[in-house]
Image 1 (cartoon, rainbow, N blue to C red):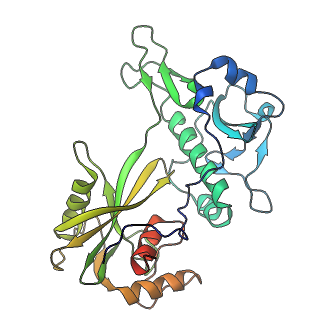
Image 2: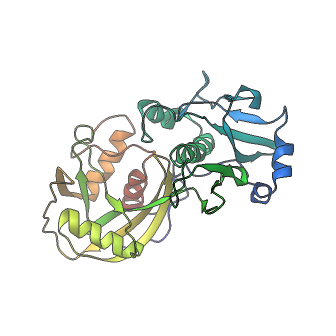
Length: 304
């Protein structure tokens, strides 16, 4: 089967923000300062978590509500309204990974608002974890409206930019069956497509082949790109791919995965229908709709 186009009816969570990033403003300190008016909005966060209104929307306040000493990130323009988020002077407690509050936000936020929040969360998290220069160890300060940090050491002055980690996530196919695995931390019955970080000196295609061989002992070919997803926990780019396995003999890397199996197209289709009802399928439990693994499965089941 030749899959080439992602169906238009399959939105990718955390993509599609309504904010204009207005790159031309970032490098102009005077223009940035001029945007910090009473009309400007400040995204309210509880640490790194979204603060939601009763109707499930993001909560925006005024710049004057920021904690004293906070650095201000320019998120972009909502029409003509400038939008900001703050980097608090003290790093919020808790790690950069997803919390129960985040999972709730994914379930209730409008897709465009979820994307706006995801971008802000990634940036705030990065700034909190990069207050010091990786070259010389001196402090850094926010620059270019929050899309850069600069070392304050006159003898160094290194520039640092928000980090995005590329991760391949792939649906592997063999004779009309899909390869899915589960980690011990997954909810009971949950299976998903396999994934792994792209390593230095490696193409996306090579990363797909290596990860599948390492985790399942399979050799794959014909790696093709399907879709991508910004994932702000803390800041990854999930690169969704499809590949074909030469055989079906699985050898599980038990340090990474609890189980890996082949599932039929009917199994996957039924599991996707079940997760829409909040249930596990007869063969397995599918990932929720906000996961790109869910998108890959739907694309494979029905590529229209």
